[in-house]
Image (cartoon, rainbow, N blue to C red; front, side, top):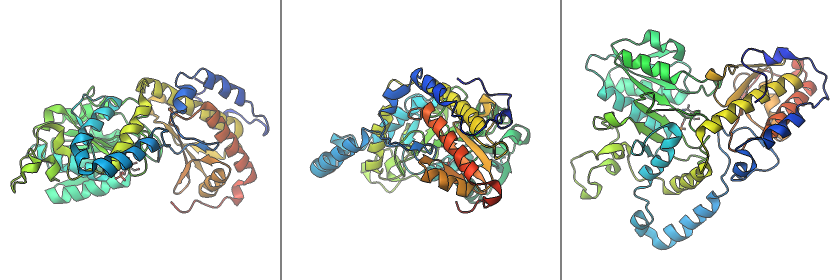
Length: 427
Ligand SMILES: Cc1ncc(COP(=O)(O)O)c(C=O)c1O
């Protein structure tokens, strides 16, 4: 772990001259001492670019192409319809849910995989409202949320006759009342990388009699979540970021065990029926987490995800967190050392307790700067109006990657003087 951090403001820390690539040796030492290291990194298909966009789309796990080829040629091509039973297709949503469960601190039988995050937000919010007390008149939504959660929550509220109140995560404990059915909160802010206080907010909601619904898209696979430990009621998350399931891979829904019996899905498709092949016109929900299912699962993506999760074999999420913080600390140190003073400002908290696994830097002309970084083989992304986002996936990001990214950023910033850098544009 680098020495920098909680209290220093890295971008004010140094005014070193360009040309001194003095953090490269330290990167080598940190990589050599990294317990996740090259063996885990080798589970992924990588090239000589520096890939810091795993908080948007995780890299391809090496085992996935072979497994998908086998699924297509054998399970689909030869077994065809028999695969629903013989290859375990029918039960894949629960089986793969059980594989995700330990990564978010859940026991088996609490997580089901399928549909998009947006759809699972809808299931969780309406399901939560249906469990809430009769006197509830509103739901709270994280005011900084990824937009889809807000859109879906507003629609869910409209359908159920409740009001929606946007509230900053840090204000939820003060704003929740006995009329609040639930709050929908992002665990890590997609834009700034700030980690919200899941234990504290969940506890405050419970004290007021409200449910806690968490969006784990930017935390699962990057840090321990502890859904059961902290009594989270409902949670959703995607699998294409830190879980590396592939583009559009299915999302998941977590329902606390003691709520499962009361979970009344707003999308009661035939896959969640107690007797799906009974083909009855009346709906009777299955027991347990199966009732979070809707219709026929996307088998190819599901099975790609199942194999992608093998990249976690022997990896503890606590070690991932340790490395994530070390990587982001080190990157901030390198940026402080290599970037022209004052050109970038971190909007990601320096405090470890409030940091996810990305670093977001405010920078004038960010769109142009990121386009140039990408041309030079450093892949992050840009968020309007002026944010450079760099995601750190501890399973495959090395300290050398962090150092090189910061070095190239410094070069680009020196070559693209601030006055020439156009304001950010595009998405
Ligand atoms: C926090 C968060 N929630 C929800 C979503 C959207 O999920 P989906 O497109 O799978 O519905 C994203 C996508 O990046 C996200 O970052």
